[in-house]
Length: 450
Image (cartoon, rainbow, N blue to C red; front, side, top):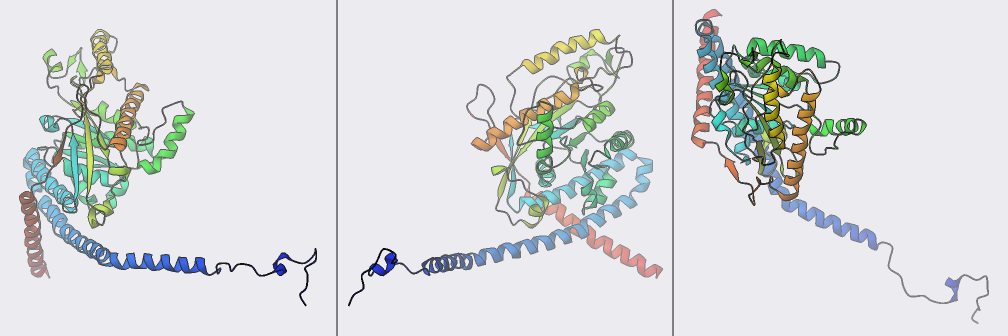
């Protein structure tokens, strides 16, 4: 006898239903996906193994490179101290050459990992012997390595260059070399800011001219993009300033100190040590400000660990130089009222420079210092404008993969920066031979003394 379901009887008892999928199906699917992932991992295992092995070999070579090159550099500096007393200029020339070779070794680590540089615009070799300041955006530690590479073929620039870097670089393998060369390590943070600017001023006074330095590399943002972006955007919002994503608002303190210390001062309305013709050609002191922008594909910067270990796929870093043709001149003087007429004439040139929209895309941009009063916030506004331009350049690059072309041209022209393999072989050979030589010299004196 078959029971008839009543109103309170569950519908499941009304009769047989079609068979449903087993609840184990998702688990089986997950297991299948896991097997696929495992299969992919197994297929990639040889490649991952090679990456690890290559990174270890590169690290071992880097350690060996440092163990022979840096102590050799220090030993050469020690035995050349008599020359420093007799002929200081020649001493710092020789030191600059060795410094350039050491930076060339660092550049070669990235070069052989496939980390190359593409330069945009006009060549800056033309001003390699003049004094200049490079204003560079800062994204990661790899920015320094990138500049070490792309400036190697710019004549004496690297040998006569002074770096302004975060104090953390002092504690790297290269810290002792930078201290001897005269680079400046600056501590970040509001608590150290005023004190560090005073130290920088004294450092420039004591080391820049005396060591025949010509170029200064400066990162005005005061830190890495990823660390400062949020703070910078909050500051911009509070002060009604442009909202920047690819760069941060720069700080003007170090730039102000550098310009005050290095720009040739004016006396009675004319350049110190020169005449009016110096305004149209070279003037003593700082002559150029180079607006330099570094861009990485997909906005993924390279750090120094990647540069050393080489575990990232080959990458082309793009470096953009911005240029104008107005000569840089100074109107510093104690009698500012007497110089007003001279400065007013420059004012017209300065305004014309800003109104000129036909900006060459990577040529060196040179700005007259006379109309950038360092005692006011005008210099800050001037720096803000440079970094707003960098934001536009980087936005265009990340959208198109190229920097915008100069006006009147359809596309910008780039050129690949190259390092000579023969030159790298020579400096590496010199480093290892020097290490071998100094090892035996020190061993000899050790046995003589003990």
